[in-house]
Each structure stands twice: as structure tokens, then as C-alpha cells.
Length: 361
Image (tube, rainbow, N blue to C red; front, side, top):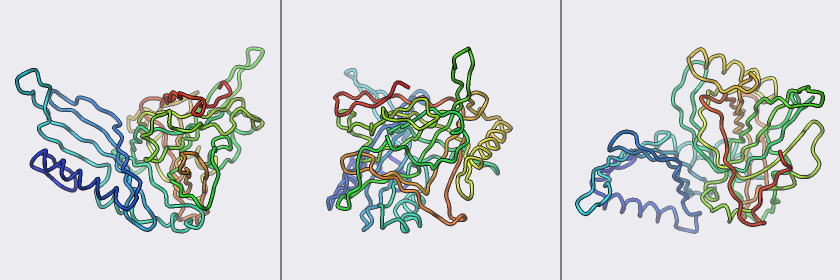
């Protein structure tokens, strides 16, 4: 038996028939094919396995909205029959990261920031996140594993406190904007910040910060083999801004992250982001959560939903749009990393056309 948030089936045959019908629906009329990715698998207890997965589909609408679903399937297993057969799936229970009406209502219907930016960019697909619990001070979010372009630099001196837009650096862009093309946009813009200590001559040290721009691939590209992805390097080996000691860009597979997060109003200034992070870390630790710190400071993850990153049909980063919204309508969130550090794994690029770029950082 299969139980999902929107239907139930009494047999495997009925379940497969329903899946085939849904697949036909979402692949009609030249729509982008559905993209399914298995994020993790594991055994919960004897006879029960769990699979975490994501599914991206293009909804049939004039604005070509993209619906991204984050879900878990719990599989009840039984021993196979004679002849050395493996375990058989007896039942499946499926849960989504949000209720069905919330999933489709928030992602199918254009948001205000999509409507006001239609003249210069398409609507954005959103990275689905699982809300584990909510307190008066923050929400505990689970960000799913993802394939992303990760651009980063290590900054020092005045750049530590300089105001910087939550948009990727120039060397992360490998494509260009053409009015005749269709683009796949993703929100929010993700920026991770962590403290470092750098060695200087004379056995001295200086405070530094690693700034990582995380650009999740659209669901349509995230399932491609690494060899089919274009080079992500738009010139990381070129001139660096003053105060930047190293910079690089590459494709990575990022593990799941657990965050304590909250919204901030007005512009995400340096002071506002760091103040919110310190308050979040203190509140989370009071509640018994483990905050990941580097050089004594929490690792900060900034999420800007007023920004979107655009990819052309060749899977190249081609645009970044940061909308100017009235203060009360701005959607910026700050999170602090919980439990364990996030250690991205670089994707192996096979040929020269897909080699990642770095200046040795």
C-alpha cells in the first residue's frame, strides 16, 4: 500500500499507473522534463528504510512556474520469497516538506517580487527547505543536499566590515543575457560566511573571513552528469580586489545543513546580518542546540529571497537580479549553522570544457 499527501494506492500496479500519468502530464506541450534526485538513503530500523528525494516539475502556466518538492519516503520491507530473492517493498508512506496546498500555492502562484521583475527576469524556482520546529526567536530549518556552483574568496582588512550585496562575484558568471533566450532562475541567493585566522610573516596572524556564494543549480541541470556541465570559471585567476587573498569557483555537492534562522527587516547590511547571527546563536545555545563556530564566531548563512540567479539553456550562470523592494516587503533571512560544519565535496570534472577554476585557495 502507498500513502502520499495527495493520493493513496492499494497496489504497486495502481501506484505505477498514477506515476506514469503524472509524468505524462508534466512532460506534455514541450515542458522541461521532470527532474528527480535521490538525496539520501538509510535504514531507520530493522525492516524499515527511508529515502529522501527532491522532484522539480514545470507547472503548466503562462509564466512557466517551477515547483520543487522535498520529500521523504518510508519503506516497509519484507523478506523476499524463496530462491534467494532480496527484500520486497510492502508499503510506502510519503511525506512532503510542506502541505500540498502550501507547496503549490507558494510556488505555482507568482510572488510579488516575481511579478515586479518579469520585465527583466523569469519567475524563480525556490530551494525547498524543511521546517523542523518554530520558537519565538527562530525556526530550525533543514536545507537539503544540493549540487551548486560555489564561488568563494578569503577577505581581510577593511573588506571584513564592508557593505557587500548578496550577489555572486564577477568570476562566477560564464554566460551572457540574450533577450531571445529563456532562463531558469533560482532563489534565494545563499551566502555563507565563516571566520578564519591567517598566518603572516614574523609568526603573526590576521583575522580573515571566507565568503562563499552558493548558487544551487536549477532542478533541470542538477541531475546532469558532471561531464555535461560547462566550466563554472568566469575568471577566478584574474585580478583580485584589494584585501582578497584567494578566490576560486567550482561545482560542489553540498551536504544537508541544519540552521537556526529568522527574518530581518530592511536591507541586509553587514551590521544587521552579524547582529542577527549573534542573537540567533545565543538563543539557540540557550535552547541546548549546538552552534558551529569558527574562531569563536558562528558560521552565518544569509538567504536573500529578493535576489535570484539566472542560468541560460546551456547551464551557464548568466544573470543575478536583486530587487529593490519597500522595507516592509523585503524578504531576507539570516541563519547560523547547527550541529556540524558543512563540508562541500567538489564534483570531478572530466574534460577541459568542464574543468573547475581556482587560483590555489
